[in-house]
Image 1 (cartoon, rainbow, N blue to C red):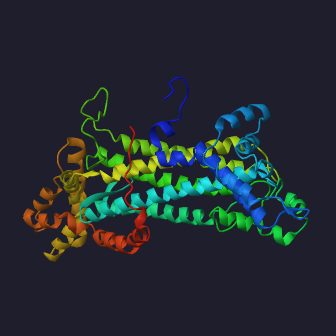
Image 2: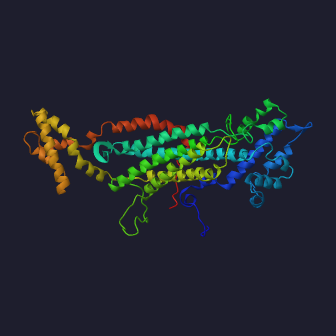
Image 3: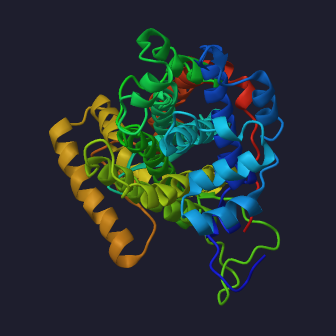
Length: 483
């Protein structure tokens, strides 16, 4: 590893080897070569000829196929220093390895034939990896929700204690946002199309020349290339490039996943502050350089940090799409080289962290119960009041008494630092006609969670199980966290 120059933390610390390969030079330039082969094969199969002789032969195709993977980078690099053009440098380098086919490489194409089609292919492969990890995150959350579906916990509105829920029900809220992201991802992935071979302004003028104005034959070029590259079709119209709106749609999917991950990580960080739930903490992990006792939610914080980057990164393709001039300008290129790969590398790191955190979440039921019992007297007052009315009390008078006693108990907690003594205050008031033991029977946590356990069961059965069953081959990704 070089230590005298900048290296991206996305590759050094966060992204997986699989995602790094998708955006590697090897992936890019082998895909260029596969596209050149697909173009040459298509032209040959459509009968491209000159004076009755085929322009492209099977021998040339075979020669090109023999050198798809052994890219002579040194030749391409030296050539680019001379001609200052990356595509033509690689055309030259490929031709040096394939002398018989050198003259037909890139025939009728423009640079965007390899550049843009490769970008689409790479984004497609990257989305498939994101899909796989997203499925696994959903599966791990489903397991966590099922395990904790009956565990009562305080819910919060405005981060103030509110009507109770269960730990499992809260996890379904995180899960459902990831499910919405999955729906968006699948839609965008399924709608991705190749650019095809459209020429310098999208008019395919070069093919009119090559095929002597035979429009019916030229109409077959894009569908044949798409099929050879594993796509259903090409975009029907374009300028020189595919619409940069495509990049915007992809980046928005990533930003959506980031937003969901950020929301979950924030909740976990708050719960860890309350000591109710903790993210995994390894035996030798250090939480603070100064405060040795600390167990900081560092992985959840990293999720939040990377997620903010991805959400903001979605602006890059949107602005680029909006500011393209006519059939194309080149002010997109440098931005695309950063925003798309880094968005994917970051979301890959985020999902690995989510897998790691959810898989190792630790729940502390005793702490949850302690917090619950400190607040439940306030929440149980309506039930207590109803029981007192059944004993002959006046509902309106009892309501006012409970209001006053609640204020007094709240003052004891907030101003004097005492425990919540509302139950003792009510039991001591003869107006209610209830003993403390009778009141305590109303304080069982499971009485206040509503349909939360049932909602978890139904959600896992009707929403999550069909998703997992449909993607069984993608379940089970185990993340490796570098640091």
